[in-house]
Length: 581
Image (cartoon, rainbow, N blue to C red; front, side):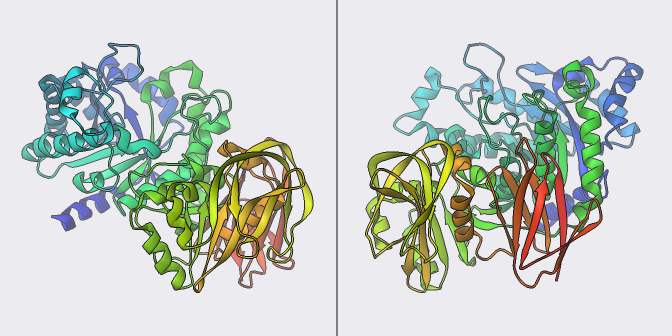
């Protein structure tokens, strides 16, 4: 059965509208119901289809207690297929707007909510050989029935248990009884840091569904409610790939909260594809073809697809610092993405990456009950393990197995920094930051642990990076500011210390300020992209006998001097290099 499932998924992914990926559009039920005159719809669709090669349309049958009837779905399905566009079904399991608390999930403690879900699944399975759950397949109901059924469990455990039950007993059973070969897809949202609180189990759920999909929306990190750093559009694709290797069908983003800067919309697409998404889904049809607010978005994203398709096939497999984040972990939300915005590429793992030579553990990794034993085994084999101040705090006294470093209750407001030239025997230099930063004060034992970077106080200094030996390996601690976005305000000299700790096994690293992203692939290809609002100078540090770098898009070759490539990079431009040995 598993081989048949993988074969059907492989056949689906082989059909692409571009050379290196497929592009789909999602049609919410309101859009589907508005299609009455096919000639008029054909004219409107050209706003998108004249710019984007559409390979698939997801046709939604249900959302928020609004239904499309069977005849209407078949009509729209037939239209797209007459244009050579594949079709799949879709559903969004939110309830109607009945209160003032934002989005409302269906209540599965009530028979009517379970029946609504069953009907929507059945309608999709009757009409399509594939359908997808939009990322509203979460739970946030706290009605009297839910409170009673929850009992003594936490809300997280109650929702995880209920979600497993309805997935098995309602979704998959209903779908497979009607259409045994149907491919049922669940789209996971981009807010992976709190999945378990609303019923998503990234360890178990991918195995229950035939395949998964990834939300890669980042929109406006500062002024939007979800405050998601841009690097997330890349990181979450790779993270979910680790949860369902080969069955993560694609990434999905939208134009909302992006009108302040068109590049913010396009960056979602770039990073989704840089993460090697097999398909990109544009949400939503009505917004892209009928909403005047977004009239520039279709031609812009079409040009993005043409650009990336020229070089995506030349990029190898994504490569990065091994970052372990267990399913259902909590802590230091989106830290990997803040560090990604500091030029550190990550390859996330949902299981502990014991085969890697450098392993990064943020606070959430301390939720693994066996993490101390896993770290010990790794370092005894010569692995470097880098942890955060939050990880030290959560692990508490258990961290003393490795080194006498503690997370104190004190804070420091700092604005000047130092680094070291002698492996921590002394620190020196005085590097100013653009603003004061609040950091936790980490306690450590002099001459037992070595300070590689520090922040100055008054007749005092506070560690930013600590390191010492353990067995054949190394253990290091990075101090994370209370406002994780303040990582961007660490001066380049301090960021370079952190980069060297994490990227010691990488063929390339970056030196310079934050807000410059680096994407590395295993065939000596590299992408550099700046989110700064101005042109900036950065340096690529190269190892392994690399002698030249050819920028693929402009076909310009850059010489390498003493293992360094000095670049002047402009905002929003992708610098795609092929490194030559």
